[in-house]
Image (cartoon, rainbow, N blue to C red; front, side, top):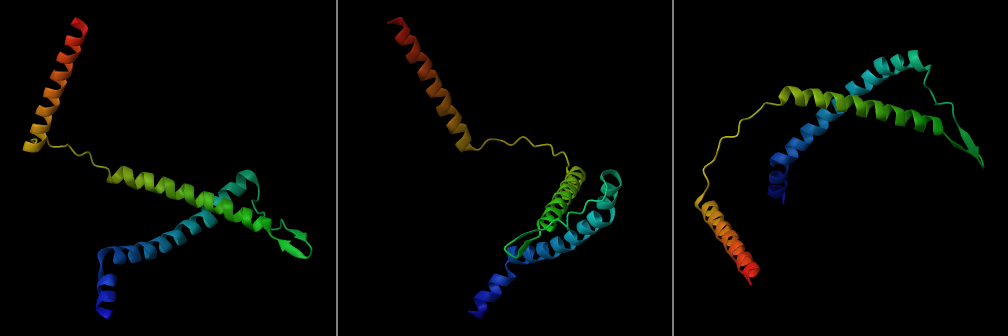
Length: 133
């Protein structure tokens, strides 16, 4: 059982996932800081202070902090947009135009093409015979 666990942990995709989670959490902290310290204040200049945290309604003594939820949605949308822009920029830099080398068809592909051509010829001849009748 320990051997199987060791194989599972050392498998490439588990290690890759762990690295992805660690980098993702660090990246989230960076983007949250960008949102909180740069983007939100900039939006505050143009739209006024965006803070719904005081919006609360009560029902039977229970407080529903709708404003905090709205703030979380706004932060999520800003973070998602920033990540979207960053991914587009990264993809633009990583994109390399690869020229596809013409590959020679395998024997299997050649046979299949011949069969296709023969079937096409048979269909054409069949259609001609039907029109002559």
